[in-house]
Amino acid sequence: MTASILDGKQFAAQIRASVADHVVLLKDAHGVTPGLAVVLVGEDPASQVYVRAKGKQTIEVGMASFEHRLHAATSEADLLAMIDRLNADPEVHGILVQLPLPPHLDSDLVINRIDPAKDVDGFHISNVGLLATGQKAMVPCTPLGCLMMLRNHHGNLSGLHAVVVGRSNIVGKPMAQLLLGDSCTVTIAHSRTRDLAGLCRSADILVAAVGRPEMVTGDWIKPGATVIDVGINRIAVEGKTTLVGDVHFESAARVAGAITPVPGGVGPMTIACLLANTLSATCRANGLPEPEGLTV
Ligand code: NDP
Image (tube, rainbow, N blue to C red):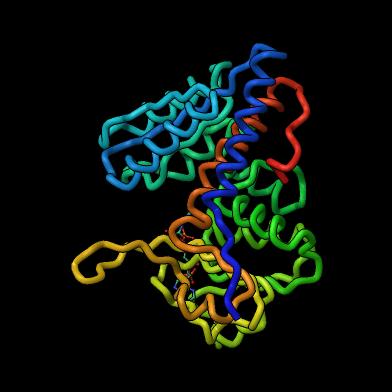
């Protein structure tokens, strides 16, 4: 069997186009321009790349982008004061603080200072609680993107056995909550899980969010299963840096029914979902209905 490829690049482009259409409507009919503020503390090279990409795509869909680059030695009080200003700014509908923060800053404290209604990353404890209790929440962008791809491929996920490998707060746990919300039978695996390969082989849907290059191989996969590879790992191959996922693509694609590639799978969906969340936040802030298909 050769798996069909779940093309995140193409799907993300469709989502951005839909977001852009809604932005035009919001501007024309209501005089509202969605605004996304991104705060970057320090000079971490990977974070700078992400922030640049987010700013570029925000502008491309017609939203206002507010970038705040702060010195690595910024004090917690100054960062919190900036978040307070953004919370109060009516032109800002979404706020994202790029993680990781420098070690002298308390990430939980900073994230929980963001107004939950503007928390487009979905990391605020209120949004985490809403998602966990099956209520309307701002959903973390990466798992939201994964769910959209799964719904797009399967239609109905009800009754499928989903195994999520990884239990982080930003990917694994919210992914499991979302799958549960769609009536999957969900198992969460992690570094202490016994017989991980055997467990993965029982999955109709396998989500790998581990951070271990090519850990999941074809013999871990049930024939015909859908494999979502969240991992982004940079490895050296013949002296060149190459991007690989947590899944060994070549062997997995021979067994799976469908699979996301790396790059070009989950990665592009993450920023598209950030824009969708910013659009939803803008609609809610203005008492308008949220666009269908761009939120859960
Ligand atoms: P974390 O490091 O926070 O979590 C990794 C999880 O994997 C942990 O729960 C850990 O278990 C588990 N794990 C580690 N080793 C093993 C193992 N050998 N067997 C089973 N489980 C294991 O990572 P993130 O969740 O933040 O990210 C995961 C991956 O996704 C990374 O590659 C990251 O780069 C990528 N990512 C991609 C995004 C995208 O946009 N595509 C966005 C965010 C992340 P334990 O809890 O027991 O330690």
